[in-house]
Length: 437
Ligand SMILES: [Mg+2]
Image (cartoon, rainbow, N blue to C red; front, side, top):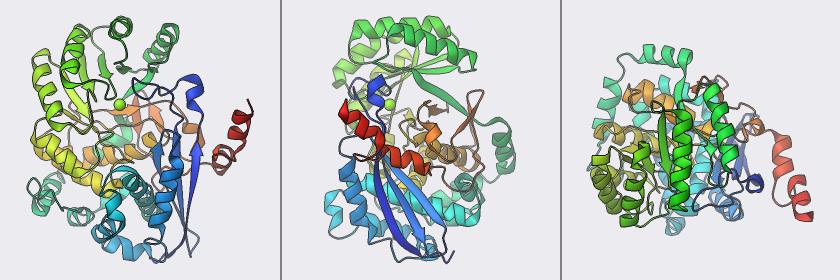
């Protein structure tokens, strides 16, 4: 624990996923899955790895923000940080000058996530445990001591948080054993990106069914007739008993969302994800209310800035599925607050994943949620996307459509150094070739 952080490096790593339309949706038509990738060096040789996810252009801005935060981290020991993790979180998010860039939102918050993810990785590695297990073995008071309760005590006090965790101690060991044996249920988004032609959709869906997938998400929102055709095709492929979700990635205004989704209701989607602006809490509430009689819930969170926004979404009954993101919020510290608030409101958490590294990261959080907070798998599942895992030293393991708990120490987001060098922007070989085309 005396590991002193002596250096922080951050690199701009981009994968040219837009070439094959992976990740394409109604608003992000050509994403190049990318990351601001952080490495912490310590005086004893142990290293911590963290990242935040981006879509390509602008990653250099996040890199710059991480560099601005570096001085707050370098020189500290791991012990100093984790013995007052709440204080350290606040140091990063409430710097008297830098907080003007957020506070706790946008580029500076993405940068905070990358740095804190690396610190958590370092902590788990120093204990020789995968991150989820580090959390599971922590005592409720210690977990709560990592959370900044500022702005959420009207909904969740520190005492209530401890009580929730203490109550969930019962059956904890059985749930951990169950996860190690069965894994955490997942759904796939890999079959139906918006830019994929029908033939590709069919093939991917057939393959996914063969591999045991039962829950599928389809991108919608660009063209209604096209959506009807694609949803019909997928529903026919997966049959009436498998689960279908749809995702508009913020495409519509409120009234448009309600009428558009109503037209798609015949395909029985479980949820509509991000129907409108991610900031429009009352808009989401109106959509939730209008779609409830159709049996369609609203899911959102991948671009929900912070715990305060999640608090209000929950207070306003504006979502029925909480989609935490391991890189949008201030790392595990802030995600813990959201998991506990969701539990208080009895709203299931179904994390956002995909991109590059998001599956690797968020699996740890959802395992913790099941074992130590929710104790339920009812209406719960974690997103899975089958891209770019091969670039990680401990890639996710999916078995029969379940995330199998990681065994390697850390937070699973260390990339292969060869991959980082090859994809570094703009000097990596992949980008040199790309630009010469
Ligand atoms: Mg989404």
